Length: 516
Ligand code: 16G
Ligand code: ZN
Image 1 (cartoon, rainbow, N blue to C red):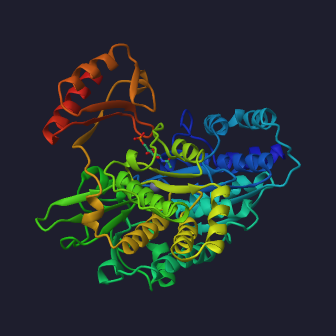
Image 2: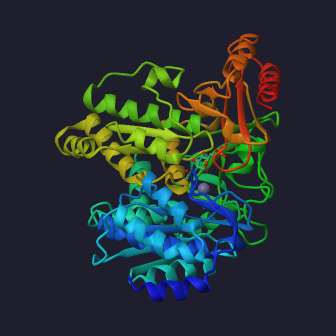
Image 3: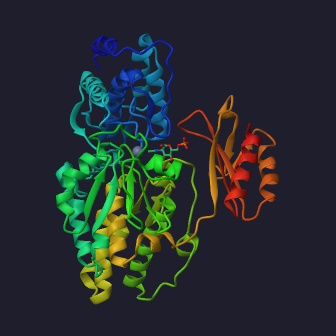
């Protein structure tokens, strides 16, 4: 490492004195004007991580669903996963080091992680459409080059596309070609193959309204739509031509306000979906004939996908009909983890097939190599209906982004399943009924006084809180309530459910008073 050069360049990306940031659930996130030094330093860190893992590392510049003025950065590990926890700590140390301590922290990290500094390093970079993103990604590149790293700047990408690129590059091209073209081709081919088999391909299944949150999703869907247009025509709203990123639109807005985005006309029973600002989340919704709004969130997406996969697996290997069930836990085993994609992703990797979704619409399905091989074999060896089901599974595997939750890929999976099953959006919605629930956020002096266990469903501290919640919950039927400190905002999140909306609202309110 040329320490002199690092010091010289670091001064050009100086850290504002006293600013402390933390590498949180989804990397660093704050107002864009405070991030220049973080970007430069994440460029440095990505090079170290690349040398250590002897793999390509990704750096994504985005603040997802946050306001346009914000920005953020996260590193992507070799298999397209989120950065390993010990490196998150290094990232926090490096970002917060005052100018004069930066070199020492960098050397400390290299020593602790036994990084061979002679090793080559390669970093790939992507960014969202925020006005600040281009300049910030240039600061990442400055960091990469000053320590001798090589890089490829993909420019504008969705977050899941960057994860895909990293995964492709580190698996010798087996997963796919590490270009946007390769991504479009892989997904579209699988989608077109799948939908060809749909007997119900009426107009109802052919068109979908997509709210792109005025973000990168619009650009990428435009580039991609002609690849899959024989199976689906998408009508884009909030495509960035007029509105502001994530403002009154996008998956996060729709999920948290439980209403449609601005700028989209919805006729009754029309199928609509929203992406978030970096296109790694998706939620669906529709208006019923009475004009009531219905949200189809991550839970219902997971249900649709799991039941479809299970049905195909049963067809291939048992040939029996699967009885219809109303709870997800009766269809497949269900596990809970802490909030945050990395926890869900790691849990899902423990299984041959793991489907994970957060209610906010981030999720995907993961398939083990063993299962993928077995399905491939079955598609070659079996006959008739079994073969057909195995082929479908093969295409579904190709259609899911194995590296990260991906709004575009999930949208195509969902559209294919609906067409193949001949399900309308209302029928999908009716697969099961959610208990009425309410989420609240509570501002407290220090949210860290609350700690939890059991996948964040039980409060450990402060003493007495869990007992208080237990007593409140007992007052309502079919009720549950949880509290946890947010990983992205300075608030405590409260969740309550009960047999009626009124009870859920009351319970949530009472629990927030107990927290306060
Ligand atoms: C981040 C996480 C998301 C999680 C959310 C929770 C990633 C890519 N994103 O956005 O998975 O649901 O944080 O935020 O990990 P909260 O703790 O403020 O509710
Ligand atoms: Zn996002």
